[in-house]
Length: 138
Image (tube, rainbow, N blue to C red; front, side, top):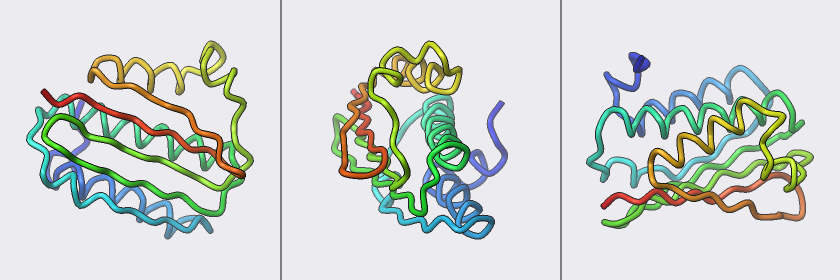
């Protein structure tokens, strides 16, 4: 089922609304650079999966990370969409992420990315959590 704001407003605006809700309902500072999402021409089911991935990442940040800031960046080229998600929380053990056996949320992110022909790379910032997701568009 597609969230009404996603169907009505499109992917970029739906993600911005999600992040604005987080910023206004918590003490988390949110920054975005997602204008490239307006350049996408993708199916509704693809937009939904991307939105759900962002939703799951932000939910994990809110519930588990003790972060005070979230940053999301979307970069588009004709062949790929790259989404960079980062928070400044306590981070996550890379082995736990890779196994994803203990987390339905992490497993769902991996499944959605697989469906989108996407990949994920976990980077180790000095503090926090950072992932770079690449989704094949062609």
